[in-house]
Image 1 (spheres, rainbow, N blue to C red):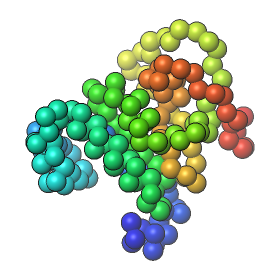
Image 2 (cartoon, rainbow, N blue to C red):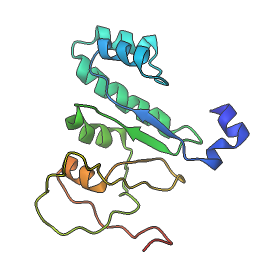
Image 3 (cartoon, rainbow, N blue to C red):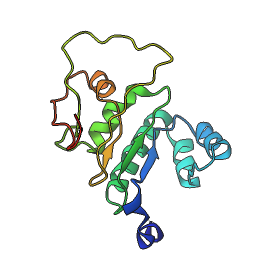
Image 4 (cartoon, rainbow, N blue to C red):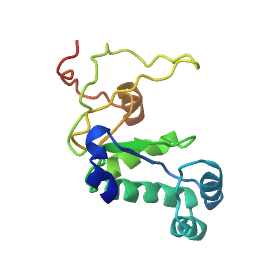
Length: 161
């Protein structure tokens, strides 16, 4: 990150760091061997191998990483991923403190109605906050469903309708 900041790249683009709970050491090894750009240190694999409950250890590691990343100057936010472990997201978001007393910058008002299933080929709408402070990029509706409560409506970003 020192080089990124020295070149001013963090001012030209919002840098998001991908983080997610890893379910097992086997998964960690597969990810680092088969997914370009993924970096999982041997120490993380060793922690997962030595854990009584690797899935819970992966959740704790994700929380620790998010807390550490929030303190790195030049990082705009976290891209939180939890493939087939979506149920872990509320506790990771809560325990990492990533929303610490704030709501997403813009969450369009939605009528109070039961959640409607989204067609499988339709991606969820994404709402992103500007890069002035660390945040999580996630759909407001998905977040509300995960947390089991409605988010307070916020003002739209300046310049939007």
